[in-house]
Image (cartoon, rainbow, N blue to C red):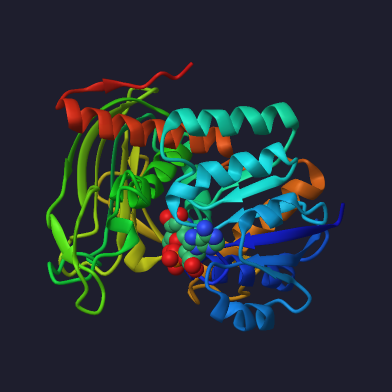
Amino acid sequence: MSEVRVAVLGAGGWMGRVHTMAFQTFPHFMGTDHGTARIVALVGSSPERAADLAGRAPGARILSDWREAVADPGVDLIDICLPDSLHHQVARAALLAGKHVYCEKPLADTAAEARELADLARERGLITRVAHGFVRNPVHDLAREIIESGEIGEIRLFKGCQHIDVLADPAAPFMWRADAALAPTGIVGDTGSHVFSFMHFLVGRVASLVADNMIVTPRRQREGGGDWAEVTNTDATHLMCRFENGAAGIVDFSRVATGRKFRQGYEIYGTKGSLVYDYDQVNRLRHYSGDDRPGRRGFREIDVGPEHPTYRAFLPLPNLALGYNETKIIEAAEVIRSITTGRPMWPDFEVGHHICQIVDACMDSARRRSWVDIDLH
Ligand SMILES: NC(=O)c1ccc[n+]([C@@H]2O[C@H](COP(=O)([O-])OP(=O)(O)OC[C@H]3O[C@@H](n4cnc5c(N)ncnc54)[C@H](O)[C@@H]3O)[C@@H](O)[C@H]2O)c1
């Protein structure tokens, strides 16, 4: 199969637009040797936007019910860009219908649901991908290469964060992200899952943790001066953890971090060196090496550039910066390549399951106010 027929669900929303663009765009940068994508269906919930959707993917069927896309024998890949609470239900139906599935994060509301999805995909030999795009910035491939080569020794500590202030203002309107019926784990599954993807990619699986979840603003008014609604999920979380390999972790994420429009970063301390990343310099890694001679030790700044294949695919010159949308284009190309070649990719639903285990553990720990072990078998 060199052309993969794709249905994008939630096509009128932010991620639906980004994914549609990414499938249409990746051949310009990543080539067509490993296949192309054809958008054959766009599913949206507002009929008034149907004409807009039709204009963005000529020839695609415009549907209002995701079940029609899942049942369509002319669809190979179901791409889920719907609110969180629909992910499990839709992914399950798609896998049962024999479709490959690319799903926005978080994969599911609970680890048990994610387990079911990963098992279904394995039993049926279907390709899966969870959309943790940030970590596909080539700067993180460089970080992993440095870690795997042993240059920073054994990892002792991972510190990570993701902060936004979209709900910092108590007057900011209520949105589906603050409703536990639509996003049961709040910021933990929403933003925490991205930090957990970095932890898995760079350090490994998490074995135990203790977490504190906070609702900072308990009630918000609906858009346009509507009625007041209870905020029923988490605004901010702080946690400590232990990884399977013995490293420690200190992590926090928040949607109420006043003034932080988007902050994401990590610090990784090893026995021989350290790595520091800050999204404010999106393609830059800071590397401290204990192998440097005394008197010359310090953090060096490495800007990922055309030496790295997924940077070179977009830009021939260093320091021109790859941003958010490019990482989603890389992601879409990897999904198509995996389907056409059968080559595994990261992060699949097995990884998505582990990330859901970490989310579950945060919810459980915060409820019980104690450390929680994660079953890694
Ligand atoms: N990976 C990332 O960086 C990232 C960033 C933002 C959002 N997300 C995830 O992507 C998903 C979508 O988020 P978004 O920001 O695009 O939200 P959004 O609100 O912009 O879009 C969701 C879309 O789904 C549509 N929709 C809702 N219910 C539907 C149904 N039953 N059938 C068909 N369409 C339906 C809505 O009309 C809307 O167009 C969420 O799971 C979110 O967590 C991921």
